[in-house]
Length: 220
Image 1 (cartoon, rainbow, N blue to C red):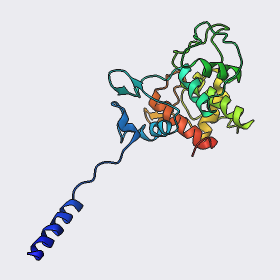
Image 2 (image 1 turned 90 degrees about the vertical axis):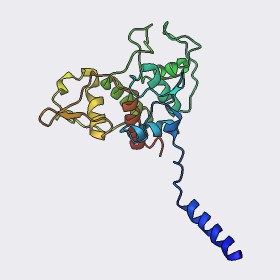
Image 3 (image 1 turned 60 degrees about the vertical axis):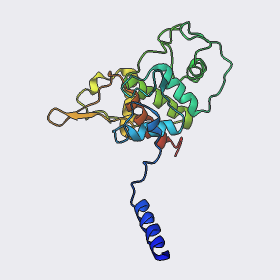
């Protein structure tokens, strides 16, 4: 009898041991529109883990990886990297309400010279960022943190559309390209395109921010 009981217990243990394990928890699982094995998974996961980006809670929880990152969002991300400092400056922009979630971040980013308005009174917080604008802000922030950055003259020469980079953004685009923070697209007979005037999706921005942070030693 005891032998039958032990045999039954052993069979149960073996059965339990061969059952498939539940998938480990993943930050991406908190959002209805993120996919674990997508090209952006590592970058988005990194930004979520460090509290740099978050999602939207409307009819479920969404990250919206294909939406364009905005000027207010980037200002807030950099502000969070600096542990959300408060500076005593008046808000000069008429389109940035004092109670807005991004108000203090914009106040800080403009006060530190990382971003500027389109005019003295207009910041356009909801305006999407182009790739060259994103590169320029990151380049300024790198100099703000480190005092100086490496120079990569001619780093964008390999791209077919290098002549489309705005004059204000050339050095910044060379820097992000030389550092491997931002890369181009390869298509049409192997030619490479940088697309400096294109918008940047939130998924792409997360990947760029991860590379930036790792290169700058902001987070591990």
